[in-house]
Image (cartoon, rainbow over all chains, first blue to last red; front, side, top):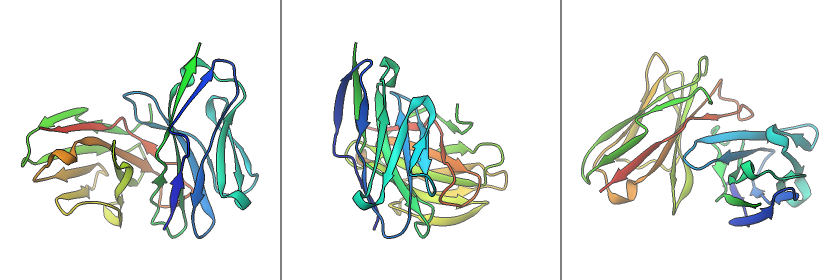
Length: 114
Length: 114
């Protein structure tokens, strides 16, 4: 069965600092990996996705993520955080044979200090 | 704005009652997915429909059912409601059934069972 672990429930960073959110997945085949962001009271917005090719993927809002098969990880990064990035971030895994369903991690809540 | 609409935005009802949540996918999308987000279970996949046919089931209770109509909108029916059914219910849509396709989420329906 597929699973996703986001080890950090809360993270606080200062505005302008760099950010890395961790995501580890378990999946028996080639995974399709996604990062979503959820602002308070909002739905989930897709930041980026990976399913093949270059292991460093660029997304919206200046985010990027790197797929590392050997570590079963897909960490999300941003070089300089803005106050508007405060939200909850979800990593998700899907793939062939997964019935096209996404399995989400528990989420990481990001707080940004001025 | 993802292009996915959900109604109503909020729903408050009593235990034992039945409610219907409605979702309209993005224009052109044939797949509709339902997810439940609760504090204790996180984001859980419920069910997937493609062009009117059920394609996959996740952790959906027998008291819950869904359907997708010829105009591609979908409804999630929740019956014999319990306090534990209080959650945010999201609908997502995608163009096809490929696992690589981005899934666009609606703003959600917040259900409160009292």
